[in-house]
Each structure stands twice: as structure tokens, then as C-alpha cells.
Length: 198
Length: 198
DNA sequence: CGGTTCCTTGAGGATGATCAACGAGGGTGG
DNA sequence: CCACCCTCGTTGATCATCCTCAAGGAACCG
Image (tube, rainbow over all chains, first blue to last red; front, side, top):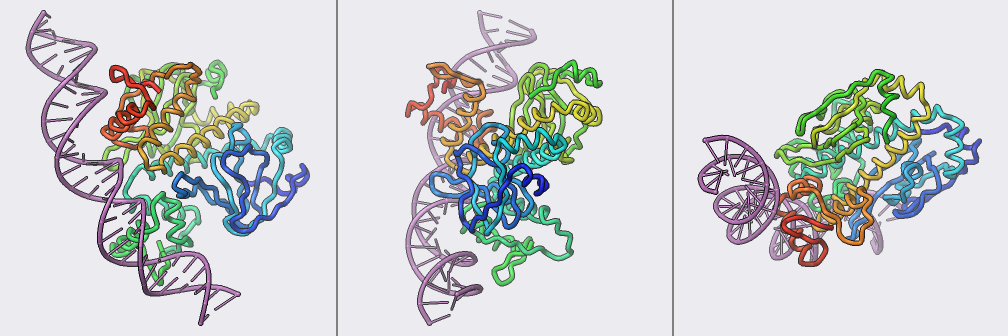
């Protein structure tokens, strides 16, 4: 979901640029803004004690992110950083609520968006529970394919490094590499010049 | 969140009883109803290939459940069964939407509810990623404590069997038992007559 | 061409799962 | 009251597997 940019501006929203890797908000902080991506992409993740990262979601152009805590009064459960250089439009919580109150037709869109997020998270948990690395990786590749509306007959190029796949699946790089190798032998993926196709 | 029962009835909702263990809806089915618990409790879970179950959430009196797929047009991502004998009030999707459309003030409650669910799921994922059994179990115990608004000075009785805790944490019973034993020695939990206090 | 990032491989170890067996308690019916 | 069953808890031994650590190799980019 995204809210019309001009509507956001009319309520006082402003643009902000982040360079790749720059932090947008941190886990544990109080949420203050509604964010929506104009250009580029953002990544939301958790870090655990060992410094291992887990990517919860990547948000692309047009997507809003970090909204649930505005409504539930929680602190941010994750950290968000610029995955690529990006430009976001941000609106303060107070004004965002004013916007919603005066535009009740937006509520349905938010509900649908949240419903999709809940579903996606339930799926993620379901897949994480299955220990098998191959299953987890396949689930990740499938969800990426679905998200990109891929309909081609041939395989889809997977634009992630092995480390990134590891961060999405909660595995270690070496495990991802070895599992992908095995999947290649079993013709479940294609690897051409180190690039992955699924 | 829950919607006023009389309002639900006025839109044609009906009651239905389920005996403990009875299935309310199955993973993969098309959602048709809005459900809200009048009495008792329901459990939502996934089963994987090995027959291992993972409990996604337990819903108690007053809680609605299984609503997100009504909005996102997904099939159910989980199965729901009666955790205890329970009575639910159910309203068909069509009439539920009519109810919402004619009572826009309900939207905010749904948004808040969904926002909390998203947060809870993100936390779950965060905890699952941390492999350490002790960490996972502690996270589960903490979330249970938080949910039950426990403010006492002493420890809280945990009304779950070890198998249930295993299903909540994605571990095996034996691992839960051994880990709890260790936590007992480290004074992190109390176990009196096989009962767990945290 | 030098540096950086990413990929790859091997060896070894830690740990949770698995399997098998038994114990303890509670309820039921004879 | 006792025998039985059923569920839940417990323990030990073994196994499979993913993680860890260490070292290089390959690709890419200025």
C-alpha cells in the first residue's frame, strides 16, 4: 500500500535521502514517523547476540514501512537501513493520524496491507521451523519469485548474494553455498557463473 | 480486539460450539467466516512434514481470530482447533464486510489489533533465529508472563506441558526438559512437583 | 593491478534431534 | 481397593547436521 504523495505533502510530509547502509530507525526506538519509499529500497532486520543478522523484509519503491508500532504503541522491533540509496517521504505520527482521521477511506488499505504482512510473517515462521536448509532456501526463493510476479518459462535470476540469502533464512553462508550446490546437482536451481537462477 | 456481540448478532452471526481438539478451520482452506471466541480457547498452528507441530498463537475469550485472510484474500496459513472446549460466534465474510462498511469506527480497532499481531510475529521470528534453546524458552515464558499481566512478586505458574512449550518454541520435548532442568539449577525457573514457575 | 567483496572448500566440533525405555500420577472400571 | 491404561515427565546413548574456523580462489571495480 502507499498513500498518495501529494496528500502526504499537503499534511506536511517531507523528503529525506539516505545513502546505502544508513540507518533509518533502530530497534528499541520510539516510532515517530510514517515512512514511505519514493525511490530505492530499505531493509528491516534484527541482530542477535552473535552479531548474526536476520532480514525480516525488504521494502521497495512505493512501500510504506515501520507503521505498525505507530498504532500498537510498541517500540520498533527491528532496525531499518537503506538497502540501496533511497529517498523516503516521512510524516510525523501526529499528522499521520490526523490524515487518517480526515480520510477514513485509507483505513481499508491499511487493514489489507497489515493482513498481508501478518500472512507473510506466519509463512516465515512456518518455514523457519523446518530445520532443513534446502526447505528454507526453497521457501525464500519461492517467495521472491512470487513477489516479483515472475511468469517466464525459464528460471528467474536471484539478485541476492549468498550472504543475503543466509540472512533471509537464518543460515550461515557456508551452509547456503553447500545447499545451493546440492540443489544445483539435483537440478532444482541453475548456477551460471556464480549467479543463481530459480 | 473484539466486536460487540449484539452487533454481530444483529448482522446475522451465529454461535457454534467446538469440543477440545475439534478443527475450526484448516490450513489451505478458503476463509469464509469471521470468528470470535465467546468462551474457551483456540489454538492456531502449523504442521510440518515430520508431523511436528508449531503453535503460532492461542486465542482466549473475547479474541477474534483468522481475520487477516479475509482481507488479504489468502487461504488460511494455519490450522485452528479448539484448545479447550469452546464456543465461538461466527459471521460470514460478506456480512462481516457489510458490518465494517456500515461501522467505520471499527476500522481503527482492527488496525491496532493487526499492528499488535505483526509486532508479535516479528518478535517470534527474532527469537526463533536465536538457536539457543534456553533463549527461546525464556522468550516464550516472558511473552506468556506479559500476556497474563502478571505483576506479582513471586513467580508465575506456567500452565503448559513440556510438549506444549516444545510446540511453541520449535524444540523437542526432551530438549525442553533438559533445558528447563538446567534453568532450574541456574535459578532461572522454579520447578516444584514438576510444575513450572517463572 | 591492487583492493574489496563475494564465493568456495575442508576439517572439526558442538548440539539438538532421535530412539528407546522407564517412572509417576490420575482416572476408570471391575 | 486394585489393576489397568493413558498422559506426561525423565534419562541415557547415539547420530546427523549445521556451525565454526581457517584458508584460498574468483570476480569486479576504480
